[in-house]
Image (cartoon, rainbow over all chains, first blue to last red; front, side, top):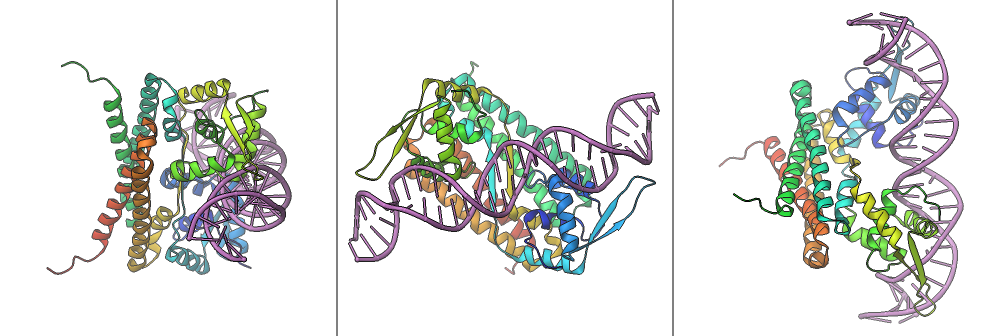
Length: 180
Length: 180
DNA sequence: ACAGGCATGTAAATAGTTACATGATTCG
DNA sequence: CGAATCATGTAACTATTTACATGCCTGT
C-alpha cells in the first residue's frame, strides 16, 4: 500500500478507470484510439503498471473471465481518484516532441531541392492521414467524450490542420511557380 | 569501420558537423538552441555517439586544446555526408509527442472547473514562453540558418502561436462571459 | 477450419536522462 | 577571487519498445 512513484502512464491508466472498469487490453485500445497522438502507452508499460496501482491501493481488480478466456478488470479506488485529481492540479507541463521529419528537413540543405520537396510531400501525406484519423475519431466517438477530452481532440485536429497548411506553403515556396 | 545502426541522434550530429567542425560540447549547445523544441540530445548520447561515428568512418576527430583545456572537434567525412543525404531521402517520418499538459486536460473532467482553467492557463504561459524563445532565436540566429533550418524554426513559431491561440479560445469558452 | 480479434504477460533490447566527477579558462 | 562557462566522460537509473509465448473466442 506504500505509494510508488507515479508516472504519466500511471495517471493515464487511472484516468481511464475512474468511471468504468477496464482490462489492460481495453486500456491499450483506448490509448490507441484517443490519446496516442499526444501520449502513447504499450502493453509492456500497462500490465506491470496496473499491478503497481493495485498494490498501492489506487485501483482494485476483479476477475471477469469470458468462458475460459481470462480477463481482469481494474477500477480506480477513491484514493486513486484523489491521486488523479491531485496530479491534474499540479502545474508541471512536461513536453517532449520527437519529429524525425522536421529533423530531416532541418538538415535538408545537404540534399537536392527535389529531395527536399519529396520530404515535405511525405510529411504532408502523413499529416493528412493523421488529420483524417482524428476527424474520424471526432465523428465516431466525439459525442461520447467528456468535454475536456473533446477539447484535446480538437487541439489535435487544429494541430494537424496547421501542419498540413504549413507543408503546403513550404511546397509553394520551393516549387517553381507553374505557368498560367 | 563497419557501419553500426545509426539513429536519429547520429544524423543530428552528422548534420551539425558537415560544414564546420564541432566539439561534443558545441553540439549540445547547438541542439539546445536550435532543434530542442522538436529534437533534443543529451551529453550521455552525444559523446558515445561521436566515438561511434568516428569508428564507422563517418566523422574524423582533431584535438584542438585551448591551453590545457582539452577539446576534440569532429567533422563529417564524405562517407558521413553521404550517409546523411541517404537518410534525408528516406521517407519514414517517425513522430512522437508526449504532452503531459494535454494528458491532464484529457482527464480534467475529474477536477473542478477552476482547476481546469488553472491548467489551461499554465499551459498557455508555458507556450507563450516557447513562442518568445523561438522568436528570439529567429532574430538572433535566423539569418545564419540554412534555408530549410529556417523553415523548421518558422514551423515552431507557427505551432506555438496555434497552441497559444487555442488555449485562449478554450479559456474564453470555460470562463463565464464577463459583463459589458 | 481458419483468420482475426481478445487477453495476459514478460524478456531483452534500446533509448534516454540525470547526476556526478574532474579540471581549465574567462570575465567581472 | 569566485562564478559562470567550457569541456569530456561515464555509471546508474528510468523509460519504452519490440517481439515473443500462450491460449480462447467469434464470425465466415
